[in-house]
Length: 278
Image (tube, rainbow, N blue to C red; front, side, top):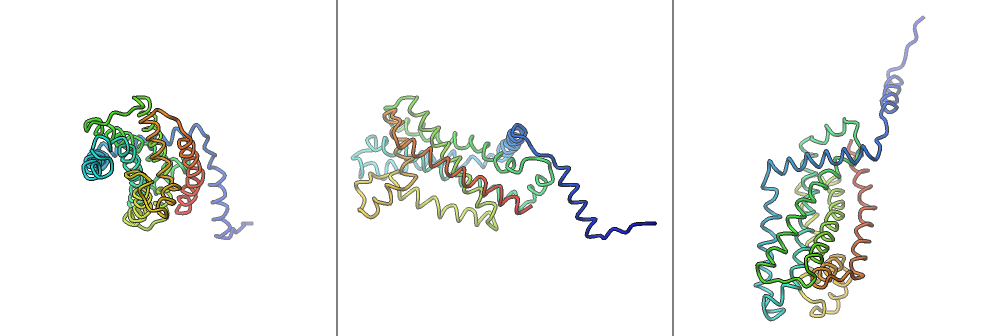
C-alpha cells in the first residue's frame, strides 16, 4: 500500500530539513568570514584604484581651498586658522568618505553579487561588515593626508604625534560607526543613486552646520544652538582638543558614546533589512 504526500506538505518538510541542517555560525567563524569579505573588498579596491580618488584628492583640495578662502577672514591669516580648520577637515573628510559604503553595497546588490553570499553558510553580518572593515584603509588614508597637507601649509599641532594619532583614531572610529547608517540605507534604497542622494542630504547639513570651519560664537543664536548639539561638532571639538592640546576632554567621551549608540541601533537594522531581501 502506497502513501501519497501532498506537494505542499512535502515542500514544507524539505524546507524544515534545510533549516535544521543549517548550523549556527560561531563568533570565531563570524570574525573569520568578516575578514575574508574584507580581503575581498581590499582586492576590489586594488583592481579599481579610482575608489581612492576621493580620499586622496579631497583632503588636499579642501584643506588648501578652505584655508586660503576663510583663513584671513576668520583668523587673520592662514597659519592661525589651521589649528581650527584641520580637525574640521578631518571630520568632514572621514564622514563624507563613509557614505560611499552604502553606495557600493547597493551597487553590489544590484549586480547580484549578494545573491551568491546568501546561498553560503556564512554569518549574515559578514558580507556587510567585511567591506566596512576594508574601508578603514580609506579612512586612514584620508585622515593622514589631511594632517599631512596641514603640516605642509604650516600647521604645528600642539598635541604632538600622540595627540594627532588619537584624533585620527577617533575620527576613523566615528566614520566606521556612521557607515552603519549608510549600510542600512543601502539595504533599503532602490538604487545606488538614491543612496548617494539620501546620504548627502544627511551628511552635508550636519558637516557644514557645525563648528568645523567657524567658531560657534560668530553664529546667530538660533544657529549656534543647533551647532552646539550637532554630533559632528562634538567630534570636531574632541579632535581639536586631542590634536592641539593632547587633551582627552568630555567631548571625546560624548563622541565615543554616540558612536556606540549608532552601532547598537543600525548594525542590527542593517542585518535585518539584508535578511529581508533574501
